[in-house]
Length: 259
Ligand code: PAF
Image 1: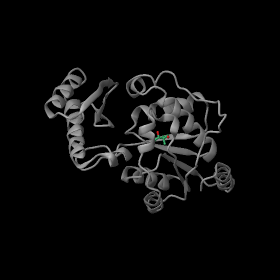
Image 2: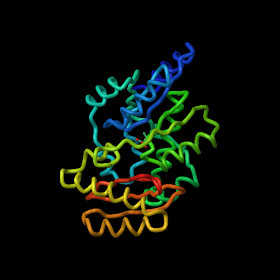
Image 3: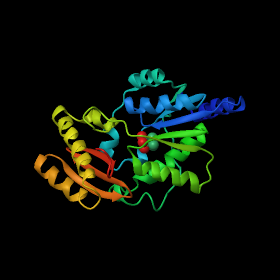
């Protein structure tokens, strides 16, 4: 399905029949992390909508937007197997004269928000559009994007949107790298480095809030090839972002975990 009006109609008719609707918002290039979110949605709700829309307003560079992986057929297959009822693939969610934005002004400011100006405004805007179109009872977001989860929960609360937001724990590859569509862009050498990055974040979090940032910085200096963007403490979490070549990776781990 590609048309917002059709999607809205389908959702309204389900709701009239008393069926509950779950939304899993994605940008496509689905992986097993998404599959876990979809399976969870299918367990809780009667109907599952997966949106796949590469939202142009949340990218900081044209290059990153254009290079975002696209795998329509594979997406359809994975979505169906995981229990999706409708894969919603809108072509464009911005009218040429669109002039409405949603901006959360506190939780979106530090960490990724400080390094990606406008990113969270783009995310908040598209999420509110998707909630308006799909009208779900609940929406599930991956905790890998922890700041995004925090911000979306705040937007929903502040705007009195009638939807329940659920977070799903980060799903990781065998070597600990959080699953992400962007991982597809890593070449084999970069992919190996990405595993080392994930290990380094895990080990750093074990050191506790005071020592974790400098521990990670030193560890990455030894490994080489990974450019740390930030390493910060956010509550009980150690949050970090880094670049391998032109690919940006984020991760977070709880302090004091078994790690
Ligand atoms: O997490 C994502 O994939 C995106 O930020 C989202 C929530 C689908 C909005 O475009």
